[in-house]
Structure formats: C-alpha cells, structure tokens
Length: 150
Image 1 (cartoon, rainbow, N blue to C red):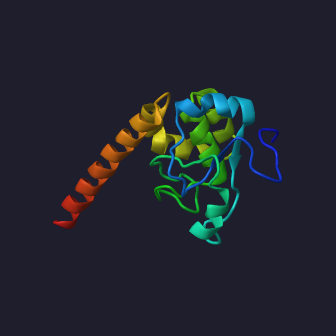
Image 2 (tube, one colour):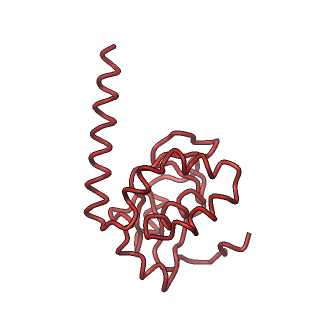
C-alpha cells in the first residue's frame, strides 16, 4: 500500500513486546530520522526467545487491546499494523496513524476500542505513559476481582 517497506534488519526504533522501554513522544525525533521497525511474526510461533534477538533500540507499546479478528479484545496482542498505528499515534502522528488503520476493514475497531488510551498516551513521556498504563491495569484488576464476587 506504499506505507511501509520490507527491510533485512531493524532500523530506527523496533517495536518489541518484551522490551523494557515503552515508546513515547520522546522517541518522535528518532522515528522521524530513522523510522520504526515492526517485527512481522505470528504470535502463535514467536516466544520471548525469538523477540530477544531484537532488544537493541526496542520499545514496547503500553496497554492497548487488539481490534483484529484473530486476537480481538486481547491486551497487548496487536497485529503488526495495529502496533505501527499505535506507535505513530503516541509519538504525535495521529493523522498518519489513522491512515494506516484505514487500510484494513477492522482498523476502525482498533481505534474505537483504544481511542481513550491512545489520546491519553499521545504526546507523553515514557514515565507519564507508564503511570497511565499502571492506573488502567489497577482499574481493570479491581473490576475483574469485583466481578468474580458476583
């Protein structure tokens, strides 16, 4: 679709689900200069050992849920396109993010499921994003525990 290209090795910041660092607005300049690499690999075939090969200059995404039909509603299990769109949104490229999402029929679903979180993460530092993510995780844990008591 002309929005990405296949590379032989990671360039710029690599989106990696096991990274200890979270992508943030502070990464924007690096992304503009060198790009974002997404590891296009099946969740069913990739374990943490596989992702360890890509830890240099890597970032993970904060809490978001999949809108794709395979992993719908599952936290952190995004498709490659969802991951790149989320990263772009967080670094301040909302228009480009939505352009990526418009290329697939369930792109609007991902956006609708995560709009509140994406808006809160956008333009924030890593520490601010980690704080927001932590608050949401605690909230969801509270709601889950409360629902277990019914």
